[in-house]
Length: 155
Image (cartoon, rainbow, N blue to C red; front, side, top):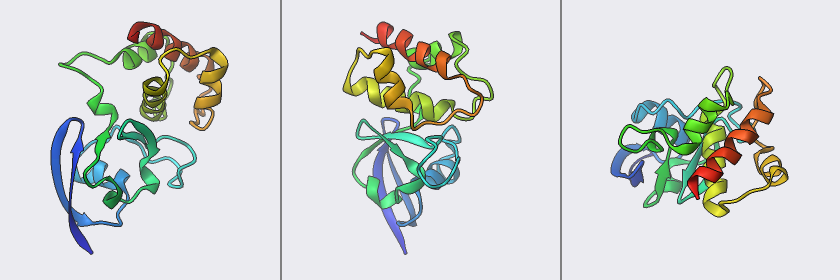
């Protein structure tokens, strides 16, 4: 059933009239054209579709759009500020923490949510918290280094 869903998307108030049970991932990609959020497994395991909902990292492939009514959603596209890369985006590029790049938006958004909770993380904490975001290219060491670099810059 179609429903008008209003929420804040990347800092702007938006409205969309869609099937309220439709997954947020598809609304972001098709209705708003925000293709940075990726489809990976479709079951919430891989993390490619991670966005922040009220500052908490969530898997958009398993969340109905009705669940974000009245909330704030932040996608990878919303991290840039006045055309400048966010420190996490910059660190991922500088540390070569991406290879194919498919998992990168989800990795960055998960890391951003993590750094919103705790600004200084140990190597082991990063490993533990990022463990559920999959990277098939094996850039894991560089991903951790990028998160550490961004954490230092974001203080």
